[in-house]
Image 1 (cartoon, helix red, strand yellow):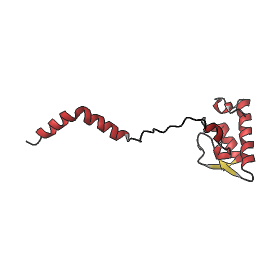
Image 2: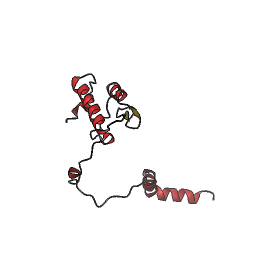
Image 3: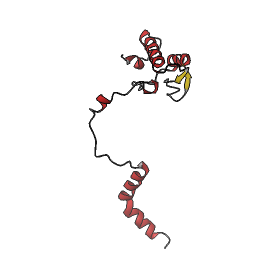
Image 4: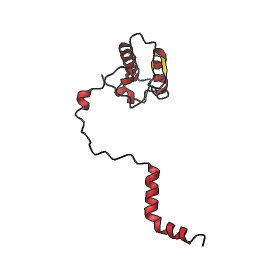
Length: 123
């Protein structure tokens, strides 16, 4: 099923409205008996639960989150076979606080001036 419709800026276009119907049907099929589901509109961002009817309304009014192409919050399983073909990265850099990084650069660049300035202060 093509999800190109999600990118369509014209939320009144047949392609977009048909896509919403496909999404609602998908959500109903994968969440049998549910009366409320996560709303993937740009405003709710899959964090708020709405009635299925309201989700359809929100998707027309607000648009679908443009990056929500795998509907995992609505029952779609991630294809592990295709994700296992992704390159493995063993050398991962540690997460560095940008503030520490900036301070390190400033200290490296200006340490002599700061040290000289501080050593001359108070005398």
